[in-house]
Length: 74
Image (cartoon, rainbow, N blue to C red; front, side):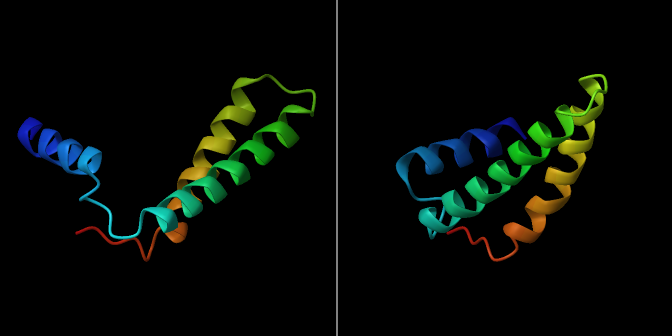
């Protein structure tokens, strides 16, 4: 398991793992911005900080597979 992760990391750093890196960066940025906006908007409500963090993590985690559904590796 460790060897597979190490091999993937080496390919990623060489630029040989992702077919379209700009698509990956674009979709990841969209997911991050959605999560950040959601976190900031929920945190404005007078609730404990742990609640917006949990809600945002769950919703952002649910969104990412849809954003990266066309993601391809080499």
